[in-house]
Image 1 (cartoon, helix red, strand yellow):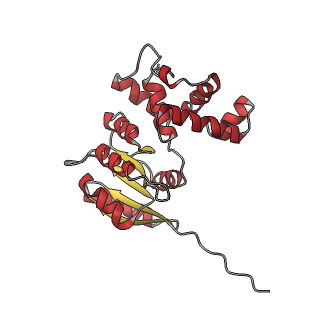
Image 2 (cartoon, one colour):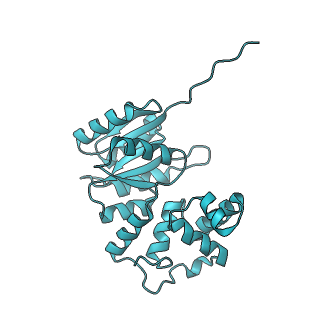
Image 3 (cartoon, one colour):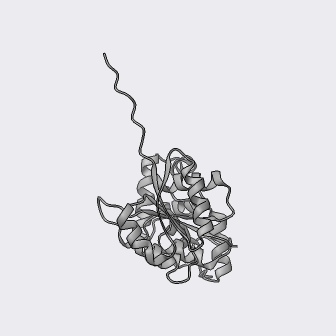
Length: 229
C-alpha cells in the first residue's frame, strides 16, 4: 500500500504597507525567514492598499497607522469594506511607533484585528501574523484600556450599550472577552460549553454591530460598560 506524501500547508500571505523603506525591508526579512509566512507585496502609502489587495490577495496586511497621504485608518476601512461571503477581506494588523497613539484606537474601531509596536521582537511579529491569520484577534485588553483612558472617549455614565439590549449572560461574556479570555477560558469561568460561549460571543458581536472581538472590546471600554479606571 502506497502512502501519499504529506502536503505542506500553503504559507500565510502577507502584505506590508509602510511609508518607510527601511521598515518594509526589515519586516520582509523577518517574515520571509519563517517557513510558514511569505511577503507577497508592498505599498508605501494607504493609497496603494486597494491595488495591493486586488493584485496579490494577502491573508494579512501589516499596516502602518501613520502615513502622509492616506493613513492606516482610512486604508483599514477600505480593506474591511471589501469583505464578501466566500472572499473574505485580508485581516489587518496595524503598526505603530507609540503605544498610546490615538490613531491606533481609530484603526481598531475601523476593523483592524490588533496592533503591534514597531519595536516588537522578530518572533513577536511573526507570531502576531499567525494569530490574526487564523481568525483570532491580537487582543491586549490593558493596552486597549489605556488607549481609551487616554483618548477621553469613555462614557462616564457607563450606559453606552443600553440600546444593544444585551442579556445578563451576554454582558458577563463581554466583560470576560474584554479581560482577554478565550472562549475556552470563558466556558470554564461560567461553567458553560465552548459552543455555548461561541454562540453568546456571536450574539454580542451582532447586537453591537461589530465584526470581531477587538471592536467589541473597544466598544465595551468606550461605552463605560467596562470601566477603564
